[in-house]
Image (cartoon, rainbow, N blue to C red; front, top):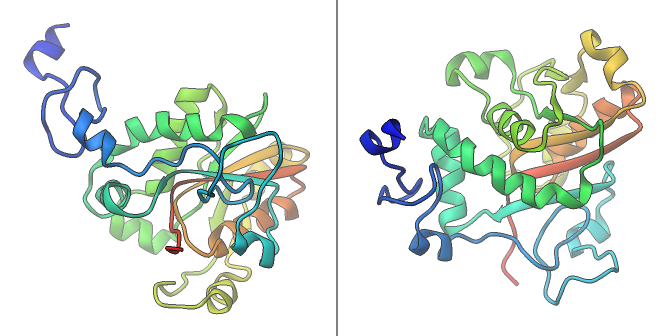
Length: 236
């Protein structure tokens, strides 16, 4: 209580006082593109219509084979969704991970199973040295705290540094990441037969998630789902 009096909770985006620590004020919440309602069951992209019992897939997932079973995303990667994601990734705003863990837990609810392992998409050690942290690992840690599931931050590793995927088409993105992510032999027993939930900050083409999912299956995982803080979606 004393801490709240000295350091009252502030909106993660605009900094005004809020009731809940690490939350958003009413105005920022309204302007943040949370993905609710009907969404693609493979990548979490928002779809027109109302959510029902039937499984729906977006156009991208209908034409692109996905090596994972199900997927979700908490936000659209635009407007405040983009601001929050970039603040975490490039702005040293580690505090964004706290509310993001709550948003991710809500989005992941249909996929969560007892005993599921949570793992972040890995960074190459040279990028980790430069950036000093893996934003996906911050998110997976926050999600594990919200769900009570086990987070394995080094379940996977990048065996080589890849060039930036920005500006590359889908085929080039997948080719660039082919074989770049491998399972960590230290966790061979844990991942064998396990259900794994992979976490990343942004999904665009799905190339990074594909490489990570394939690495999990190579290690003997029974099932893999994916979860992104933000989903890049083309305007209709």
